Each structure stands twice: as C-alpha cells, then as structure tokens.
Length: 149
Image 1: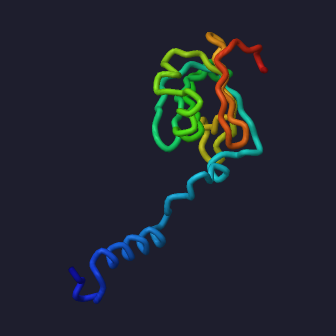
Image 2 (image 1 turned 45 degrees about the vertical axis):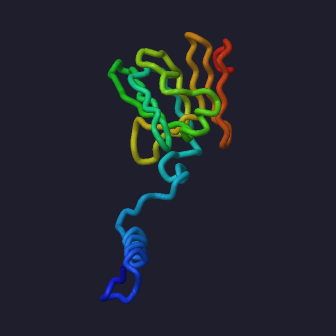
Image 3 (image 1 turned 45 degrees about the horizontal axis):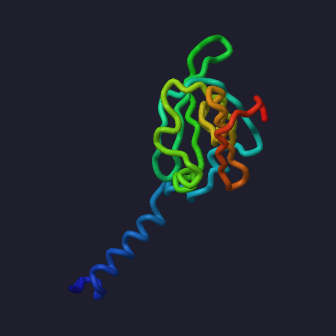
C-alpha cells in the first residue's frame, strides 16, 4: 500500500513522521542513564526510615520510605535503584523490601526535587541485608553486617 500524496510506502512515511515528531517534541524524554541530570552525584544524603512501598518496576525499581525529620515531621522519600534486570540477577524480587521494614538508605540527592535520591547503599539491620551500588554494579549481602560496614 502506498501513500499517494507522499509517493512512499505508508509504513516508511509513518515511521519517518514518528521519528521527526519525537526529535522535535518539546521536553523530549531525557536520555536513559542520564541520572546525573536528575541527581547530584557529587553529594550524598542518608535517610533512616520505614519502607512504605517497593515498586519493582522497569526500568528502575524504587522504594518509598517514610522518614522523620529533625522536628519530628514526616517526610516521604523516593529512592531509585539500579535497573530491574541487574537487581533480579543478584536476587532482589518484588518482595525483598516490604512495608514496615526499617532501613538506612544513602545516595545522591535530587538536583531540583527534594526528598528523592539515587540509591547507592541500603542497610536493613533486622536481617543484616546490605545492598550496594558500586559504579554500575549492584551487590546484595544477606549476612549480618556491622553498622556502617
């Protein structure tokens, strides 16, 4: 089937139109893995709190953690993790983190949004779970750890 007005096959014309639209669309989707534009990788923040939910989604799972501020006020933090595929490879599943888990989470804070971070480390003292993101490689240790190890 040909597109009579353009003189090219309809699927090719449609594809070209979609590519052009995506390229010119205002606020185009940022490049994947450009977390340095969202998170300040030169800074680190640590929060201690209770897991409210764990979203084991593609491309990047995240934890929602309820934290008590210095004045006792409740804050909700969103902690983004490495990609789901690599997390599955090290044994993380949709039930690894559950509501009520007490955790200490460290990572790079958001540049323009408060209460978000890209997770580099998570400790769960109740069972000694330690998650680390070193460079591009995540790891999971399920044996007891010393605090701050």
